[in-house]
Image (tube, rainbow, N blue to C red):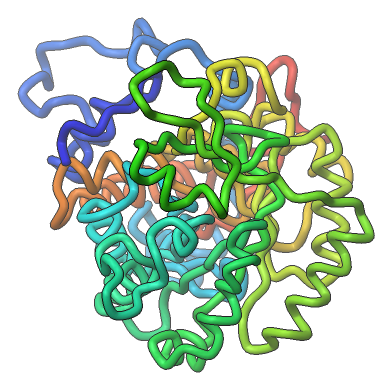
Amino acid sequence: MSDLTAPGFPEEEVRQRARTGTAAAFPPPGSYGQVLFGAEPQARYGAPDALDALRIVPPVFVPQRLAKLIDLGREPDYRDVELTTAIGGFTSALPVYVSATGSTRAAGGDLGLALSRQAGALGLPMVIGENVVPVNGYGRLGEAADRALLGRLRAYAERLPDGLGGVAVQQSTEDADAEVWNLLYSDPAALPLLESGRLAFELKVGQGAKPGLGGMTVLDAAAAARLGDRYGLDPVLGEDGRVLRASTPGTFTAEILRQQVRLMRNNFPRARVWVKLHPGRDVAEAARVAAEAGADAVTVDGAEGGTGWAPGVFPAQVGLPLAECLRRLAAAGPPPCLLVSGRMWEGGRAVKSLALGARAVGLGRAALLAAAEDPEAGLVRFADCLALELRLLISALGKYAPGALDRADVWSPDFPPES
């Protein structure tokens, strides 16, 4: 699994966290007293985007710290920050969820199962992405259990603590043809999650890596022959027999989205309803429509998001950056439970997103890399490091829960706090 790579992403930093856990939040202990750090603040993280460029700005006066002091009867510190968060009808151990990983090869097989087991052990909600059933099967007898939907679901549920976590299962156009939600809603394997309120269905409207397009993967000749009746196949990848597999993106208007959410609530009343949006120019309006129709959570995938395979022009030039999505959502009034993703891997970017209106942030590439680094505990150690950073940063702001963060906690010349 360690041959998984993520060009342009801080891969080595993620792998270090997967190896060493909370120690990776600090410089090497042996450098203490010998190395002077801080002269090049961007050297580690690379050139900032608008979200990276924001500064987290602790106040001098901290009334919430005083309230915490009175409550505890002692001076509070970062260990008193409570990170448990309500996410789309679930309870999560952190303001974090594991973003959708669908039928792509990177998330299949042993890595997909390792990711599911560790996400479950952590009590983090997890999204199972689109096209798993049409491509890899549901998990019935004779289907490859390690790649099928039920394999991931069982791997997650077997490690899940009582009262925490939950699974959201995406459905795209091809999944709807395969009746994925109908299969799962009536399956005894999903009953424990359903009865405990920890199953959600997520309507996928779009994704950050390919706004306006459906999912895309590469198929060899054998797989193309097997799936050709379910997907569009295009021989645009050269002459080695491999072809492009393209899903359809679906067609939405405000009324179609509204009716889809209402249909989900009517047909699957015991499941939570999530909606995933790509970073479109009308993302604030789409989020409002979904929330008003009754969605328990609205996920916005920034242009930096995505774990799947995409045409190079899309990540480089298509879709709004996450910071701009957050700005537009804040101006319009964000949905009650806004989930966001896009290059999340450390506490600073997460805290900024929470301060700008998100309820929780999604781990995609980072979660896959951490699980690939150590299939037994890489994601667990990575999450431990992230949790420590969140506690340190939230406490520095004089606050003791992610929900207490607000716009005043971040600043840049181009993104000043509200007065």
